Image (cartoon, rainbow, N blue to C red; front, side):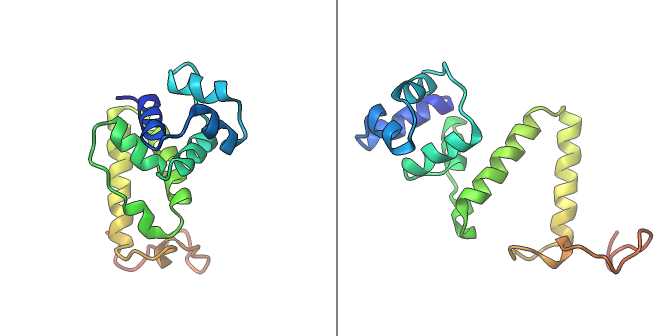
Length: 142
């Protein structure tokens, strides 16, 4: 199932017509119907708006499209729209990388998690460290 089919399925399951969805988003009905048929690419912004209008989020729509289990952990962060936008951007970037490059990104993410084991919104390890010189490493770095 692709993202277009998922959007249509969600819309129909909620008894929302393409016209109603388009009106709620301020777009032409043809924008919705062409997107659902895969004839029009959706911008990140429009995809997010559609997901919200369908009482879902972009992450869940893609999970369903890819046949994965829906995990709504992004909703725990308070601003799921922001989290979804970041995840969608990461997905787009990763899709353009080679297998080796993806592995490097994964390794970097694991290292960041090692430095930032807590789940705060802005962990101290990601805040600017103007007091450190370029040659100084954070305490506990490998």
